[in-house]
Amino acid sequence: MILSVKDLYKSYGKQKVLKGISFDIRDPIILALVGPNGSGKTTLLSVITNLLDADSGEVTVLGKTNKDPNIFREISFMQDNTVLYDYLTGYDHLQFIASVHGLAKGKITETAERVGMDRYMHKRVGNYSLGMKQHLLLTMALVNDPKLLILDEPLNGLDPTSAIRVRELLLEINKQGTAILLSSHNLGEIDRVTSEILFLKDGQLMKEDISHHEKTYYYLTVSDLNGAEKILSELQVPTVLIQDKLQIEMEGAALYPMLEKLSDENIDIFDVEKRVLGSEDRYREIFGSDGS
Image (tube, rainbow, N blue to C red):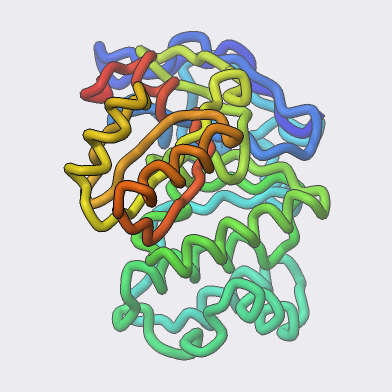
């Protein structure tokens, strides 16, 4: 058993945040924790890693109680950037962690290169952008090659290129045998790394395999949005205008005849993007369109 959480309760005064939370991670999977702001995601992760005491309940990590500090030789928790010190360099932070774990200095450089922050790790953190801080936090979490990696909003502040790199890195790490528990607001990125999701609502969890809710959407960039919408309506193809693209839901086999029809009507097609979405639709069903 990699992680076992049993019947956790946590309150702040009269506000009950966690109400009997239980779940297990038995195999090295990627498991996402999803919920609106204030739903208790960070509280749950902090209780699991013993940064907060639960009112009641039990957490075991790799067969040990989470009260045992030795668990941090085999797990890591990536928190937000408030744990960083502006007057220290990224290397200073990494060197401290490496010394705690008894790691060679070469491990610092190797992990920094892997994440892509080696170019600026000798700069002071006070001069880092938000994305650079996220890279440092991830490097700090990976330097000890954890068996369980816990991430709180790992994609926060990352530009698209960096987000893709981090996503690919998480998939690679997981393939090598590391279990990952991550919380994120970025539902599109969650769909790209896992279908296993814990929805946290009203202090309780709903665990679901989102693959059962997945839908395939195509996003069209065309020369004439209004004209394309009219033609698709005549073809009884439901469309949604999202910024400057048309979102359509349909089977792939029906896509090409539809594109040919648009082309025959002198509508230029500049781009067709395919996305398989599941978590966003399920999120709306659970929390409503306003996310509450």
